[in-house]
Image (cartoon, rainbow, N blue to C red; front, side):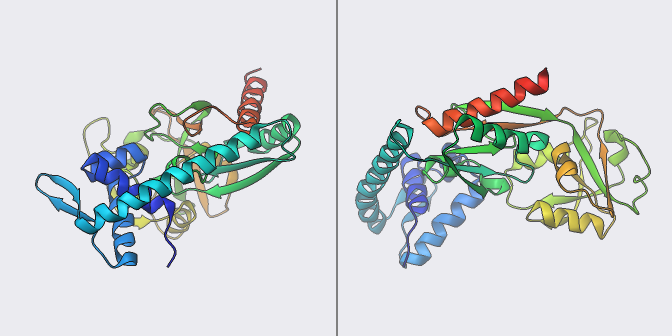
Length: 301
């Protein structure tokens, strides 16, 4: 049996908060995702760890025993992560390890230039990229799995160190056969008769913002297929009359002959934020931030 540090941290957070909802906010994940991960750990262990009552969530007797031992393990894990970051930041470090989380599109049109600039700032960087899910963009920062994330708001960044990478238009993506496909651009009112794909496992606020739900006039979006990834969304759109909403960088990164991307001209732009875990930045993290700053300055110029 293989237990993950993340699952143990989730159970500890719920026990401390006394609520799945409060714990999910602190962990920067959705409440359903947190509940699923706790249930998965309980199945793995074959024992119930938390009791859900009208007064809140409390550890079971078995849960108290597990959490008492898990606390020492989590503390040791955090010490190891902190030590590794300190060593990686030192001038004697032969390589600069950097683990970066991303959603499709990463840093938009600046992605290639950004990572070229990073290697110029820190030639010894050893870069590892990991795609993060819509509903769990930031938790890898808290459990030591990631050193930085290119996140797509709205996400609960809170007091985590972060830097705005760029803003970009939101786009309506439709099949080449869709009635709107011949347009150059659209406004929100043009979506009134559209059926939209719905992002699975996404936080409610994130899903609603990207779906433009509700509309400015108070009407609600109509949803059809539920999709679990960007690639799945594009396939559903291409094969049907359902539509999706994406940032400009997806149009740049995923051009296809069977779909059309149309700017939505009367909505606020999307953004990409570079987010770091709590605490001082390591040498490779500083190098990434410097690279982002340089590329942004060059673009502004």
